[in-house]
Length: 392
Image (cartoon, rainbow, N blue to C red; front, side, top):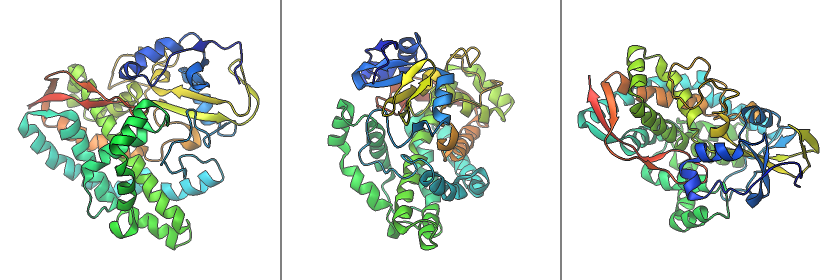
């Protein structure tokens, strides 16, 4: 229900030209007010940091069981579309595997694989930052720790493209993607069956939660799908986005060469500037006044994360990429509150491993041609980033 005091925007965030330059276009469009009415989709929308923070932290007023642009087909609701107590129970079990402490056992393996891969990448000289670095690394290490036995890992990419596009079920992008890659839905779920994973990998551990009664067997099977769904595509986007920013800003690459600890800050700055996931949405659970807007139970509201992360009220010099930014934590790219991304420690570890290995070997990186922006309803990043790596 529209609060008639709220400005109306007629923009379509999912139109191709808007997607290609979402942060700038949506930033301008959403600047007039803390909250606007997105007429095409009948939902409220914001690009303000303070509004986004309040929205994502208050799960009682803003439920995750409702999505701003409609229910996503083929996406399991466990964890993704739950509130407490169900969400709390499921997240507690998941975090036993995804906490920074639990993931530490994989760090040596990630670093080992990054070192091997970095030697090969640098020897080639000219590479694609997405296919040859980001995708190659993540599609190696993440399925490995899950315990995948036999999988055409490249098929994960069209599956992820479809999953992200399903954010807007009726959109042209989603319909076209479904026709092209719909066959990957059944394929993916078959790969996640218990007989197709090793007993000692992360997926096997999740299945044992069902054996032990901490989850039902059905919940365990779904959680394997949810964990895999959340663990590779956003990491690929983050690594690719980081390489693009670093190629555009050679002084920042040199700063990391001088101080390798800044690789971890570079990750946070990358996803602040360009979150791999463009938008988050919630349903309004109760009548309330929110930043001067009269919301009603049943309303929906979305936030554009990349715009909120560049809000000048929250960030100094927000459009500048700085690997030594003093206050970079606090960005909204992983969500906030109880629904904050459970796999964020894993994403940090993957980025630090491969980018850190390259920093130790490469004096500078430069673009060798035009980059191609990904066109997807939800995923924000690049399809191609042609690079030349200068060893040193």
